[in-house]
Length: 159
Image (cartoon, rainbow, N blue to C red; front, side, top):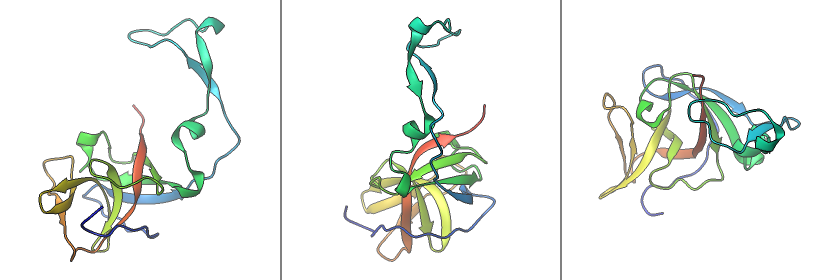
């Protein structure tokens, strides 16, 4: 990837107004807790719990944590990523082993501040894009102090 140099770093800072990180948690994979995964889709109801409909067992750790050694969880503070379905107090599953390519949601440290934004390649290079029109995008240049912690693989929030 040309443009700004991306690397991983471990530290945290909290800002209350932008979509930033309020907590960081290591990924510790507990023993499997597999639950039934039904083979049919649910549109407006729930399938019969009969064994004929069970596709297998699903462990959310297996689904959401591909590389435990490179995975951590962060809690989001702020609302600049609402358009991406990321809300205040959501938990992001972040994988440092994933490539931070254009279009991915990343955790970045920009000029000493930790933030979550969508990485976009533009004509001049790269920018960190907010998913809320109330927040400005962050253009990146060779002079920008930007370090990518990792790529958000999943977002967890209650309904």
